[in-house]
Image (tube, rainbow, N blue to C red):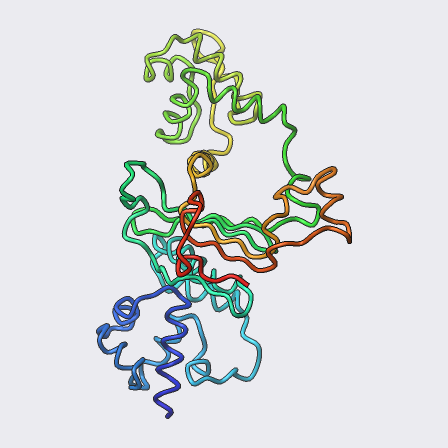
Length: 323
């Protein structure tokens, strides 16, 4: 058994999975110090190899630096790895894996500083501003928006469609209707209330009582939200007569909407751009014709900007490199 290769492979796959030595050790029933000894040239007991491979989402052959007899099905391996965690932890583990894989989006020779998972998503920057530690990554394949911290984490992946992002946006008038409605007094409070209750139909009077708003105001908001397909309704026949009841149509989208809106309203904490960083984000009309033409001027072929990108100057070590 080549102890050095096994230790090197364990270290490599552990970091790729976003796990600490302590987390890996706990998962296989040993101490973090034991994992450290493996990675420094020792070797685990052979009986632990299957458990280690399962936790790292790799084959036992991979721990020996061998490719194995055939190509590993990445989806199957990832699925097995996720299923090794309790259900309530799987989404968080997947989020951590996405962040640990960011380095693979970069071209050869480029790197970003090792960050790992932060203790908090809103560190004190000394300027009194309450900002989230948001990472924005733009590369030739699309966009990643990410927060990776113990108290808040999410990862959103936005591969660019062949036709460009603009081709799939809603008509501007629909956005104006939505944003105008959200700005109406009581609308955000109503949506917050609806997302704080169990999903099911309700009548306007019940919502108005909880929000301490006039019933007429709540009814107008509910009708407007239904027109935008945020709510749906049905007629209920009661002893006193017919009444219209409402229900949220797609309740899971509300939290991401507010998170993304908050991120949009702040200067980024970490911005990583790889590729033509002067090209427009939306390819449409004259912009698309200009940047799709063979004569388009390309700048910043490979560029990584790491740090608070609203600052005009950053030390060289914070940029991660420029080529």
